[in-house]
Image (cartoon, rainbow, N blue to C red; front, side, top):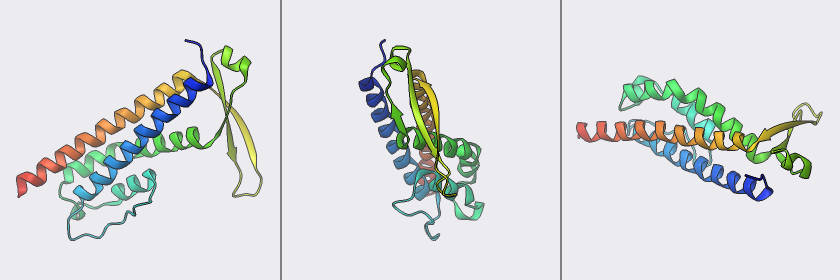
Length: 160
């Protein structure tokens, strides 16, 4: 397969859709998991890492299923790390040098130092496989969250 800008843009689009689906699943899981008399610590516009941090901060007395909460806590840090990777991939600048593309490489320009008022750039080299791996990891995280959501829903139904 010849690497092109179009292929990269298409894959970034898929990553965006997978991430949005994961965000929806996590939002639904949060609402299903917390007891109805507990206030929500998550806002509509919160980012996915914030939602996972909110899930991690829940106590056993806040939820309908301690088993589900324990499961979430086992993969929440991985999900937060995955979200950070996705954010870098989607918000950093991509450089499409014809020589790099011919070699199967793409470059991402990572910005840092803004808070310290010292803007720094770093060139990071990636392959198309890196994008495919991110998409795969997002899909696997969707499955984990979806499974816990199904378990919580079934647990609530059994209680009613």
